[in-house]
Length: 43
Image (cartoon, rainbow, N blue to C red; front, side, top):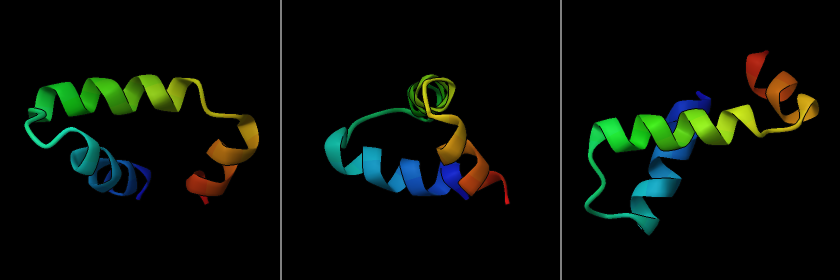
């Protein structure tokens, strides 16, 4: 769910982004999320 949400959000800001670039970007964003934010999405 987190990836789907971020994917939609990021595609608006980066219309030509590739799937590979998108995955890397989302992965980096996830690593920097707070524990509370991660807990919300892991439920």
